[in-house]
Length: 78
Image 1 (cartoon, one colour):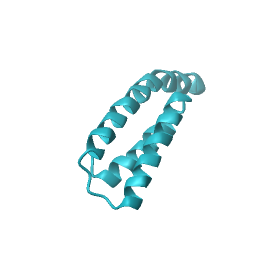
Image 2 (image 1 turned 120 degrees about the vertical axis):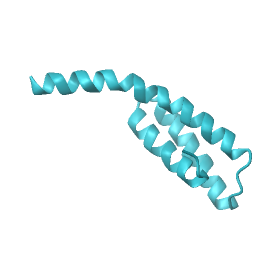
Image 3 (image 1 turned 135 degrees about the horizontal axis):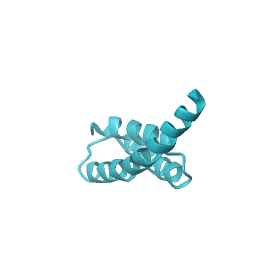
């Protein structure tokens, strides 16, 4: 019964996590337009943004959220 409950919770949470990815990508894109980062940091943010999108498209939304959170942190975005 515990496993069934856990599986149901994960199944119901997946769409919420999946919906967060595009919102995070939009925040990153908007912040990139006015960001004042070093070239190396800017390249890293763009790399993380691209990886997050790839992970989202592959269905690995938890990894995508984590990757995009790292990019947002570098940009100072909530």
